Length: 256
Length: 262
Image 1 (cartoon, rainbow over the protein chains, first blue to last red):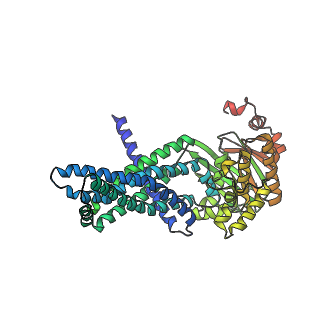
Image 2 (cartoon, rainbow over the protein chains, first blue to last red; image 1 turned 135 degrees about the horizontal axis):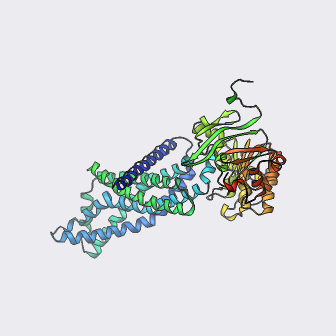
Image 3 (tube, chains in turn brown, purple; image 1 turned 135 degrees about the vertical axis):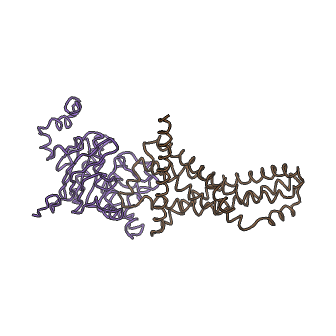
């Protein structure tokens, strides 16, 4: 019994320690972000990696999500003759919730894993030490560009995702379910407020920060060769995905 | 002579390590280590694997913070430095890592020119010029555009050496410069280290367990054992040491005080 509490306690302590370290890294990253010079070349390269290269997956995910949303809400709404509101539901769900969350999860799987693996490999092959030895701060050189790229690119991805998701819903409703095109578009527009979009974009920024910070943290704290890199990568994806889902609830509740 | 013996640093001492302690959990790696390296000298630290040689040089360049003790670099106590001061101090250093530690996302020329790019206002063309010159110095030609993954082990070490000397440091640290190389390539690296000392007049610390290399490049050799320097002297003095531990190590015998755990 005592052993159980011992185990439970150490788990809690480890969790708090780890969160504290991630927070510290986040604060340090922020501090280095505002210290010149800005490494534009590296930021642009990371933006390409995080953003441009993520577009295909995000697009495919969004169009199918929009399509399935239209199908499902149509099935439900028909039962109480509210088919006309399919467009509204698709648009609100995409913009407020599914666009940011699903993009966040996609990016954490694609980009977070890559960040953790790359920085982890650099750590175990002493490349991070080499940066220090060359009088260059690795946080400034490696983390800040990834952090800024994720922060600025996530909202863009989410806007794309929103648009494509809404188009997906439109296509299914109009071509498959025979909804009137004009009514669908009107229903989509009329009930959407700017606030909905802002909430989604705020989420996108927060998710970007979460992905970059957690993945870079895992990469920097990699120990023990190839196995360590594998573990760091897994941890980066699992932790950032969970954190995205949890923080998503709280952001929604706050903006309610 | 100042009466505060602890703080007195001889003017010709480049690096002075005093009473250095470092533990990782229960593993007490350095236990009161003392070492003085004179300006322009090539100091070789020998010792078995896992005796803390790497920890020692990582402490000197500020990659690892010691638990106790002081390290004077060029007369200043670097253990009291903050991150910004450490960064400034590191510009005096060049370091050759055991496996090169080249940045594998950059071609050779960007690797070698990294310090110049970060810390000077030189244009890319000027940096390329310096890079070519440094690569020639380590005997490499025409590999500027290659990626590190396209290089052999020996070439990686030489590129890493070129990177270490690109900023013309005052102090060079070599982490196992010849480990993992064939005997001929190892000798090429040894020759390079000697040449660099003569051409650039740098102070250097090399850690190794390759005795051929230690005798060849060392002005003095220090033996690290159980967290302390147990013997220090010229290669000849070390070769004729009366200390059984030193003798076992330099002759590479499996029987002796080290393996008996004394």
